[in-house]
Length: 274
Ligand SMILES: [Zn+2]
Image (cartoon, rainbow, N blue to C red):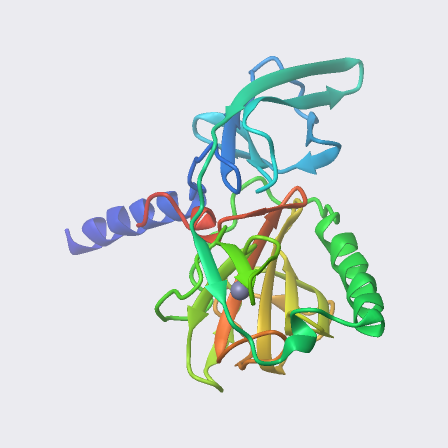
């Protein structure tokens, strides 16, 4: 009796984990879950703006998980489906989203208005990170099961339109989680370390490839405890919280990219929890 009950519970948990899905939000900085038609070949590849899109499968069929850039224009958009002797497209609508504004005063003006050498360094680092974001590693067809990389209150939300000393900057491409200096930061999902670096704005950073172009970035670390190529399980230690790079205090910046679009990390967390 107890054994049977335990078995049922175990199966329920397993089922939920196996079919974890991200949250559907057809907005700028959101994720569009688009069901694929049954007639699409088994080896179909999906792309959005020339970037390959993850395809996942569950009991309801296959679906594309499309990352929508913050800078995307609201309105009709489409994904392309291709396979041998097959091509098709599916349209979807991107809704406008109005993210809040924040004005910050920084004393270190070198990180507000970088000089030429700093700009050159930043350009090189940005190119390095862009190459990582454009990586597509084939992986299993289930959505990675995500959890928060650390516990803590949120300071800067995703999408915040930021102004440093009155000057507009790129909107916030991740989520800032407040945590004490030296606290352990963990891998938010299974994956492979694809890049580590000590960047001008992001400070000490770890980038994790979760497969199919889904990439996490964890920034401002005081210490990095992993190396490129290392396999990680969800919850594994990747480093310690710090305030390296452009940071007003210790916190963990968690960014998530899907098909080279930075999306709200909260949306990759499972829509339903076991
Ligand atoms: Zn941040």
